[in-house]
Image (cartoon, rainbow, N blue to C red; front, side):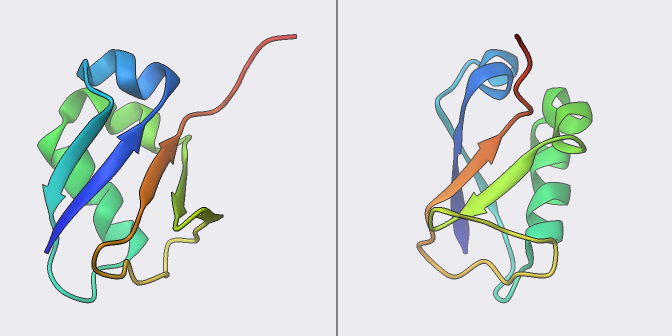
Length: 81
């Protein structure tokens, strides 16, 4: 399945895109998605380790299976003060 991932903040800066797409096998987990993103977009690899992923507007743990046509967002850590 094709999975589209919305990007924000630093992730958007690193890729130059608001959204990217990666191919995932059926029944892929969030951990599989992280690996696929790191492979397809090496500039994101370091940031992915510190970022949260949301699937259908809810924070997702690594074992969650990504449903087909899910809305996925990569949420980099926020800093500031």
